Image (cartoon, rainbow, N blue to C red):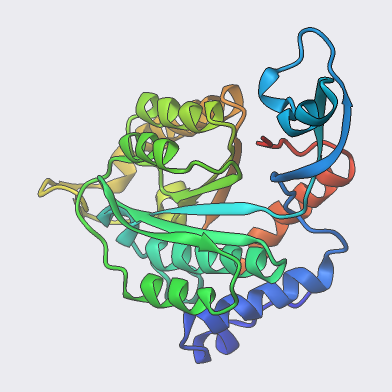
Amino acid sequence: MTVIDQSVLAKIARLDLKAKYIVEGFIAGMHRSPFKGFSVEFAQHRGYVPGDDLKHLDWRVYGKSEKYYIKQYEAETNLVCNVLLDASTSMNYRGAKAFAGLSKLDYAKLVAAALAQLVISQSDAAGVTMFADTVMQTIAPSTRKAHMLRICTELQALKPRPKTGIGEVLQTCADRLTRRGIVMLISDCFDQPDAIRDGLRRLRHRGHEVVVLHVLDHDELDFPFEGMVQFKGLESDRRLLCHPRSVKEAYLKELHAYLTGLQAVCRTSGVDYVQLNTSQPVDIALSAYLAKREHAAVGGGVRGGGR
């Protein structure tokens, strides 16, 4: 698989070209699609058996033969992937070790574009919803190659907005996304765990497969600060002047508890959890997850949100 050199990536200004470059590496290293389809098409009839769902009765056949037949279906390869991208101001953080100097939001944009490119390259449909405390913009899923340019143009222009409302947005999307497929949440997940849990479960209840791509900066995970530092809230006006060493142990303990809780929420909700560290090149971070997903698909272990 091709690994992107940082100097090469820096020379590619357009997001769609970056995404294409990443995906070429994915495809070169994969033998099967890492995504699986969820739509269905008619296959054959079989005789009605008491207890069968009446909505699958073929009334046209009954009109001709006066006999009850059930329509059976088989899976297609077509897939709908909806990417939900968090554009709240907490995503605007950029640490010293960030890959190619990307903020969490820029990193997430590249992840979103790469996923959309991968799905569309497989002739499946990809769409993107951008949100903060509410839905900011939705690009409906499409399979058209030209659709990638629109997705990347809108992602490139996207600016962060104050406040986060992940749980409420997930509930909204669960109501709006009528066709079952994969929903991929890209976020730093700075919201109440209970709200996130309820939103994820609503999506799962609607039959979607859900993946949480948890984007965190190296600074947030390691807390490497030295000397007197003033911390400023990205989604509030609060400031805190302190010596990092005096709070590091407590911070890491709280972070561990939060991450453990979020992972438990995902596990009990039947949701895949993937942590992305912005210090790691995007293609390497995504390839690790997609390779795992491909392996699970070969072994029959990928969850599906089929009709």
